[in-house]
Image 1 (cartoon, rainbow, N blue to C red):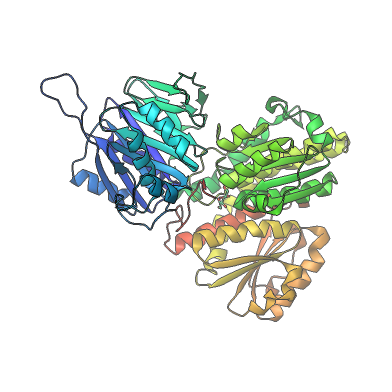
Image 2: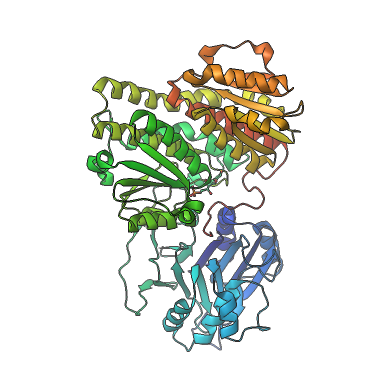
Length: 615
Ligand code: F6R
C-alpha cells in the first residue's frame, strides 16, 4: 500500500521526490522518508556522485518531511522516497523507510511473510533498528552483496516469501537505482533529463506519458543515462513500453478544495467518455478488447470479485444481469473468495472489478479463477496494472486518475461499463429486439446530462448534509437496487466523515436493527424502484413511528407529501435500473460535505490508503 518513488538524473532530486511523494500520499500517509546520494567532486576526478545516501524520515505527512529536508539542506541527484501505510511495526521514525543495512538502502511496498524466519537464519536478532520486514530484506540483500548487484538481488528474491516492490541504492554504486518486484507494482519512465520509478503511474504523469511496468521478478536498473531490464538469469529483457493517456492537468485539484469534490464534478465527462469508447453504431462493442460474443453468450453463470466500492458496483451488476439476462450472478468479496472453497469453472464468467488494478485480494482471486479455466474479464481504471495484466480480457474505465482515497468517479464509470456489458450480453444471447436495445442505450446516454443536473443542485444537497453533521449514527434503508446504492452511500459517509453509518435492506430492519433507531438517528431512505415503492414506504413509516428523522430521496414523479419527512430530495426521473447513477452522486456529495464541514482531511481519511496491496 505504500508509495515508492525514485529519481536519478541531471538535476537535484529533492523537490521532485517530495512533490511526487505528495501525489503518492494517497497510498499511505503514516510516515515519510527519503534517501539521497549527495553530489561530491571526488579529488579532482570526474566521478561526481559518491558516497553513502543521506536518509531523512519522519512520522506524519510529506509536508513535515519537506521542512526537515530543507532545514538539513538535503540534496543530491539520485534518490528514493517512500510514504508509509504501516503493516509491520508501529508508526515511528525507526519504522519509516528508507531502511539501511550495511551497503544497502531501500524502500519497500508489500509484506515479507517469512521475515521472522529470515531474522533467525541470518542471525539478525539485535542487529536491526526497526520492527519492519523491509529492514530484514535489506539485511538479506546486504548479506548476499559481493559487488554484483544483480546476483545479490537474485539470491535475495529466492529467500523472500511474500509480496514486494523495492527501490534499492547500493552505497558503492552511486547514481544507480535498482528495482525488483513480486506482485507489488513498480513502473519506470525516462526522459533526457532523468530516469524515474514509482509504485504508481500517478507520479509518472507530470513527468512523461511513456512508461513500463517492471515484469514480476525482473530487475530494472536506472542510471542518469539509461534504463536496463534484466531477468533473474541476468539476461537483458526487452522493455514493453505503455502510454498514459491521462492529461497532466487532471492530476491537480482544478480549483476545488479537495480532489474528492473535483472527482465528483468530473463524473458527467468521464462517464460520457467511458460510454462513448465502447459504443459503435449505437451498440455496445467490446471487439477491440477481444471480447467475443461467445464468451458472453456461452457462460452459464457469472462470478464477480471485487472489494469495497468496486464490490458495490458488482452488486448493481448482479441486479441488472439477473433481471435482464436471467442467469445467476454471485458477487464475492475478493478478500473472502479463497476461504469459501470457490466453485468456478469453464462455464463461469469471472468479472474482476478494480479501480487501482492492484488490490491484492482481487488479483489473487482472479488468478485462481483463471487457473480453474474460467474466462475472465477485468474492469480496471489503471492501465497496465496487475489485474489488467492478469485477466484474459480487460475493459478500461476512462475515469482518469482518481486521487481522493474515497472512490467516486471510478465507481460510476465501473457502472457505465457494467451497463454496457449487460446490454452486449443481451445482444449476444439474442434476448433483446432492436427497439429494446435502442431504449436502453438512449437512457444510458442520458446519464451524463442527468448527473450534470444533480451537480447543479449541490447546494441543496449541502443542506441535507448539514443535518448530519452532529449525528453519531446514520442509517440508510432501501430494498433491491436501492439497497445496493445505499451500501455504497454508507461506505462513502463512514470513510470520509467517521460517522457510524450502516445500510440496511429495509425489510430486514425489524429483525433486529430497528432497536437502534431513536429520535437522534437520521435515516436516509431511497425509493427509486417502482415495483418496491409501496413496501419501501411502509418500512419508512415503521422507522418514523420510532421517532427516526427520515431524509427521503425519491424519484420526482412519485411526489410524496413533504410534511411526513424531515427532508425530501426529488431525484430526476430515469428508468428504474438507471436510477443508481443520479442517486449515488447525491450520496457522494452528502458524504463529501459532511467531511469537509467537519474540517476533516477529506482526501486522506485516517487509517486508509488508496491502493490495497496487502491481504
Ligand atoms: C472506498 C474505496 C475502496 C476501494 C477498494 C477496492 O471509497 O475506494 O473501498 O473500492 O479498496 O479498491 P480497487 O477498486 O482499487 O480494487
